Length: 158
Length: 135
Image (cartoon, rainbow over all chains, first blue to last red):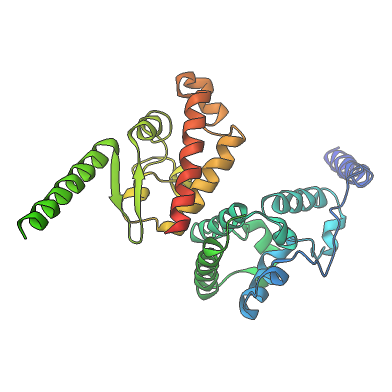
């Protein structure tokens, strides 16, 4: 009796998972070589650019690399949602389109989330070990952001 | 010689009077590490009544404190770049009516910024940004 129930439950779960795959959801588009990318807008040091690309770009740019499991619901719902939300907050591929104030705010928030260890997200790091920032990388990013803020501040008002 | 002395001391007295007058008009003047920053009384009143409760060093809300801490405007923590950045953010947030947060206002409707207060803060932020930039 118990065995039968277990089998039924398993079948039910599988059925739900299969149905889930057919629920339509739009995959956030990707695009490489963006003319408005931060690296094209400002001479970002190579090391910093590499760190940004490895640890931030999957959610904070148009250059997202989708892992295989991001094609499977319900994981894909979470992944797509994170990417959309991440891009909304900060999109390095559209950096040049930001106003002076928005650039300063974005850099200020970068130092904030790094100091508070809020980014990269823990859930992202589980399957993206390479994205984990070392203490040195974090410090370098923060001081880069701060010095870039000085440059933007000193630039002509828009 | 006497004349020069008198006219010089006259200028000095006038200058002093101006200086005092100025400090009377200004509610708050403090020098941060690279900039002298002023918060006029009328602005300070709005901030104290509507913003400071969450945005101060002793605030329980870690996030609100980290995002904006009014104490840091006057205790050397924020430099001119940081102050400029925060002022820009204030303009944006107030422009979108995001502060004080709607949820908070449900409980404390009296904390709502009046249109007049909002415009006052916005005009002040804009002016301070120009001043900061020209220094």
